[in-house]
Image (tube, rainbow, N blue to C red; front, side, top):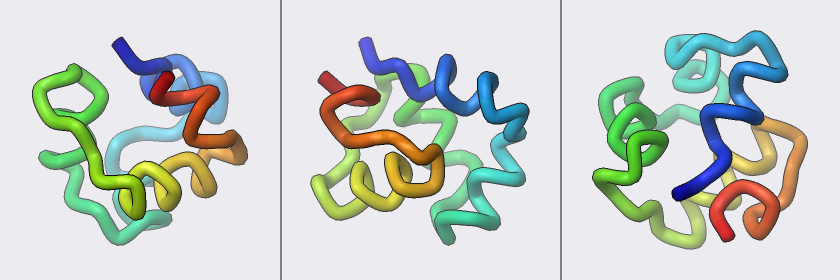
Length: 60
């Protein structure tokens, strides 16, 4: 399980906010957060950067 939800909520970001900041669709972000999809390293880096964290802190 990843910590994306925790980081996103700590930043008071909605899926729309994160989507606008990353260029990744809200639907895909929801899938990733729920663990239904595994992001590529590139996508994981984009999300981590938008949440001011590192990939290992969110996804490992």
